[in-house]
Image 1 (spheres, rainbow, N blue to C red):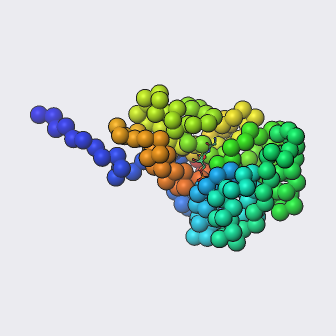
Image 2 (cartoon, rainbow, N blue to C red):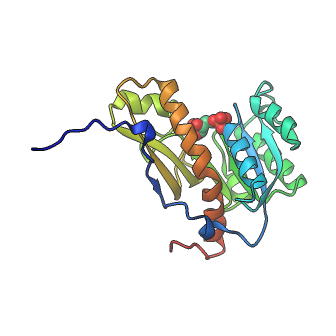
Amino acid sequence: MVEITTPTFQNTSVLISPPIIPEQFQLEETLNLGVLASGSGSNFEAIAQSIAAGKLNARIQVIIYNKPKAKAAERAKNLGIPAVLLDHRHYKSREALDFAIVKTLQEYQADWVIMAGWMRIVTSTLLDAFRDRVINIHPSLLPSFPGIKAVEQALDAGVKVTGCTVHLACLEVDSGPILMQAVVPILADDTAETLHSRIQIQEHHIFPPAIALAAKRLQNTDPLV
Ligand code: GAR
């Protein structure tokens, strides 16, 4: 007789690919990060915690935020990290905002750009200044559901799993070479809020090692290639 069991996904470990093997993500050089955030900044804080715990060899030089009330700024204050407001409404074009971002990142000597919930479309002004060093996180298994409301898009589509993706950014929104993904099952009673909060747990988990992976790839010491 076949035994039918009902799995409870909350307690099952999710699939993360590539797997996070801490020794493989050790970096010899310290990365100088500039973080861009538009909202709560929980990913920013997760990266800061990973650095503080000695898991990611990096420093957050500055966080740039574009909404005056972004909670990310409050988190930066508590963490003692410089925060700079560049309100997109004060710039005539996307390029003008990106030019100000590049200037600020250079002032603070950041070498990497970490888009941690940055809800602006970026231009070649930023991407060319930090070639292969702009990293984005998105709450879906890209290339599915790019753009805004990714969690709602997954629920509306009726897919059974979704997740999050860390990737190198390119001109097209939420696309570019994928660094790491985590799969999150969708439960029958999920709302956008419950699902997003489970996705965020995985975002906080994969973002720091995915940053290390990007650095390793650039140095051609990617453990997985
Ligand atoms: C995250 O879920 C991130 O994946 C998403 O914004 C949220 C920011 O949360 N980014 C995008 O949708 C980019 N297209 P946080 O402010 O708590 O880190």
